[in-house]
Every structure is written in C-alpha cells, then in structure tokens.
Length: 326
Image (cartoon, rainbow, N blue to C red; front, side, top):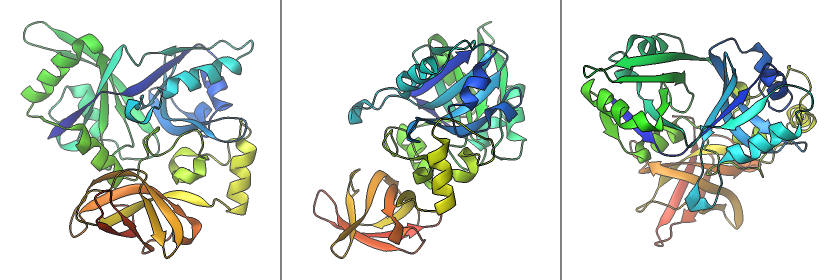
C-alpha cells in the first residue's frame, strides 16, 4: 500500500498529426502500432545507433507523450528531453510535430499494485490488465470533499515488477494528490525504495545506468523495447547488425553482492587481474545477499552464476554474483 513521489522526471509532449510518424523514424519501438491511450518502452537512437534517450512513448489525442528519467544533477546529467527535443526538431522537415518539454509543469507519483484498487475508478482499471509490453493509460479526475478537483493522467510503466502505475498531475496539485493517496491508506516511501524496486526489475535509469555512450542492446531490454521487424529508423543498421552477429561486448546485468558496506556507483569488479564489470546502481537486497545492483558485465560474465570481486570505498571486499532477474 505504498507510493513514491518522483522528483525528477522527463516528460516531453510531441504534438501534431505527424508525431507518431516522426517518432517511428527515430526510435526502436514500433510507434505506429501503438493504439490510442497505450504506450511502449523505447530507445531514442542517433545515426550511430547510440541511445539519446530511454522512455515510454504513449499515444494520445494530441500526439505522443514521452516519459522517462529526468535530470541527474549529482552525476552532471541534464534532462534527456533536451537532446530528444533537439533530435525531433532536427529530423522534422515538412511534417507537423512540435516537441514541448513539460518536465517542470508536471509532477509524478508511482503507486504500487496493492494501493491501486483503493483509488479513483479509472486509475484502478489499470490494475486489471495483464502486464505486457503494451502499456495502457487513462485520464482521471479525483473529486475531493472540499470541492477540490485533481485532474491528471495515469500510465502503466515497466519500472517495477507487477503493475506499477505512474500518476502525473500539475505541479500545483502534487500535494493534494499526496493527501489523497494518504487518505486512501497509502504510505509514502522514499525515493530509495523506487530505485530498489527498479533494480530488482532490471530497469535502467537514464543518466545513472545508461547514457548516450551506450547501444540499446547493452541495456538488455530487447524484448520490451526493440522491434526488429518495424523497418528502417535512424541507427537501425547498427542495432540490426548487432542482433544478427550477436556481438555486443558488454551489457547490463543484475549483480547480487556480499559485502559489509554498500559499494558506490562506478565500483569496478574483477576476475583475477581483469576488469569484468562496473556497478551503476546499488540498493539493499533481499535474503543472504546484503546488496543488489545493476551494472555492466563483459561478455565473459553475462551468464547467471558468473562471479567477480571488488573493494568498497571503505576497503571492504565484495563478492559479486550475476543473478537471474529477481
């Protein structure tokens, strides 16, 4: 029965009749097959096939809404919307589509499965759909006893396991939304709980786990975020070649860590004298492994059961094991 307020989200509206056509040419998902009020996970790729952005693309009456990780000030990473909006502008000729950054206007809360059934009817309907790569969305309006109305949009997102739903409202109404969730029996959890759950679900956060130096396949989200049958798009040649040859040399894996103190991001993992991995996100873990992490592994350590070692900043030894997704 908990929820998490998300302080940094990237929300980009691409408005116009040709929005889906333009997005189809710039990303790995088959955008033109997305139905109204539904979405897909996708990578926005440049001409070299590198990842300019990682978002969920939702289709609505005005065009598209792209939602993903916002700015990561601690790591010096700007809002990915800056690069994505410029990318859309660069490759829009006579077609009609206009990117509008809504990141500072809208605020988001992610709600766990258990709380959904307690919420306003249209939101609760998202809990009844079977999880798949197809992501439904609905608009909602919450009417409070004091005649305060909270309009917004709810989106199924693949960030956690189960059926998590993102609620987006105007920034001016985020406190009202929090009060509503508390009154429905919700418990507000910290942002660290959000990241723990996405690590468990093997979901990379742009600017933390992946950035514009990575190829889409290196994030290991192929089945959910890459269509290999949609036809040509910018960077498709690189993506298709990697699929045909199977030659990606590093990819994101889930690491189970045994150590006495929490390792920092960018901690290197070794097998003998060789660096075989690098941690990107770390959180408290379940069971006999005190910590879990997302991090890159070299090709020699892709398989579950592969082992490596490292050292924390405080000098504690790390035993690392590539695990199945939790």
